[in-house]
Image (cartoon, rainbow over all chains, first blue to last red):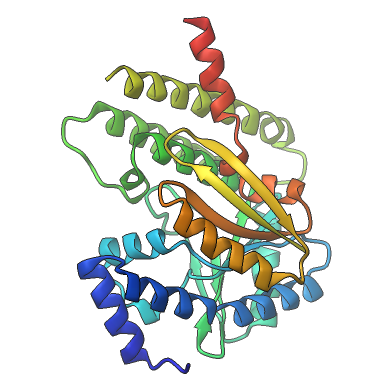
Amino acid sequence: MTWSHSQINRLGDRIRDAGLGDGDRGKLLEYRATFVPAYERVVADISKALPDLKVTGRPEKTPDSIVAKLRRTKIELARMQDIAGCRLNVERIRQQDDVVGRLIEVFPEARVIDRRARPSFGYRAVHVIPTINDRQVEIQVRTLLQALWANQSERLADVVGTDLKYGVVVPGDMRYERAAGLLARSSAMIATLEESEMGDGLFDDLFSELPDRLNALVGAFVTIMTFAMEAS
Amino acid sequence: MKLFLLRYDRRRGELISIAEFGGSDFPAANKELLRAETANPELEVVLLQAESEEQLRKTHGRYFGEFRELADIGRTAV
């Protein structure tokens, strides 16, 4: 089946309003599957152009995540850019810039969203988004520290509530406030550190220790959150 | 590249299962994804692709984190 943008957006509107009924769930899965060829092409092109990097991917966003994003952002379904996506981790900012440059050479028409310049609720990364046969594929390029922060953010959101990732404030809920504060501070700390890269070796000791410290800090916080939730 | 089907309990921060498919076996993996999504509405079911599980742990660490272990250690300590 060939999908027109208006057909896709009507499906998105119905799902946003009424959720996933049996009929629309099937249609959404059918539409989602149309991203797989574009995803496979992008992964193949990255693997060929950047053979030293190990690309990983998620060919199909979960239906619940699609519904949640439709409701949260009001975006049209046909414009949703992350139904299929892949990731590249690099060590530091300099390599991140190099890899983004290479990706732009491979996908000259791609959009680039630099979340380092404009973090999304603390989330920092660079997204390169090529369109293949009218299907967008989101390539997330992250440094090790950015990846670590993103993973910990998702873990915290699993415990405290998914809205945490999107800056939703629940008045009076100290868990949200503490978790949001922890994420904001750690994101700012990582940004300062990464933007201060001034020469090979200068921050090597700090870089080598920070992931472990951040992991331990957020891990302990998640543990406390778990106890608090189970006790309530 | 291989395909991995993960079933993840968000609430508990626990990876319930991980199944591996050959990289070229997209139809089989996708069929199982659809089945698992329907059968486990309370879980997050996700299909990921990587050269190895080790690579997945680097880029999708959330699913493999020590969160559960930390929580267990905390319970033992109380």
